Length: 297
Image (cartoon, rainbow, N blue to C red; front, side, top):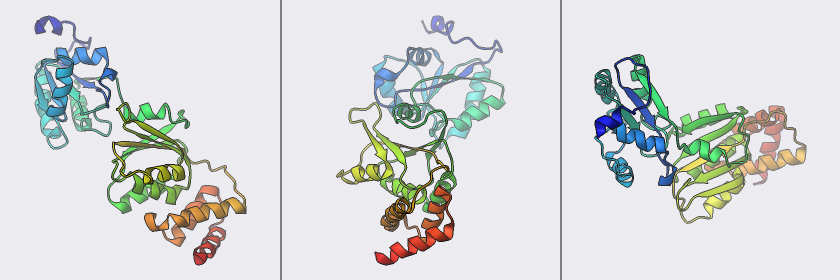
């Protein structure tokens, strides 16, 4: 039976080699898998899975009986060499992660890059991506966006990247764990200011939630929860360097930034620098006003 199915495998260059199929899987709701993805997972000779236990649940749900092997961040380079041998023998392999699209903030990039160098076909089987799913309902500009995935866990490196992104015009997209999402938003708030944003949590799952508004509102709602649960995707409007503000609005920005200082650990100079850059204002003017309000606290 499987031999008959193989004859219907996706068309590809007649090189005598197999192909690596990068297969997107659901990020929560199993109904989001495509018919094509199910067919490919049934037809290939081997499934390479980030976590075989997790993938087995998916395979059982769709009655997919096939060989599978682990392929994760720890063994990715080793697996790449093994897969090249199999692909050169004419076998087809499907690469899947635990959820969403492999190699996008998930294992798979090293394998894809290595196999491409061998001039072996690498074919995407499109499907779910949390970043794109949330962007489509964020209500923020979608004509240009910048996906950053997970930022470094080390505070210094993370803040450096946030500062570099502050002047970017595209909508910004971040992944973060529920344990660190509040800290991340506080740091972004301290550096970028109170921008329009959306937080998506548990996309496509039973308790999915979308908090739209600005960073201040999102923080308020998250802190009101007993516990934040579920993987989070944060969308933030890009920089608008044309924005001009009067002194009253500037004072409001400064007070908001100062109120966040104890969480973001930004100093007076940092606050002044960030606000001055956002609104194209003289740094000394902003610094003097920051000092004034800081002395009043």
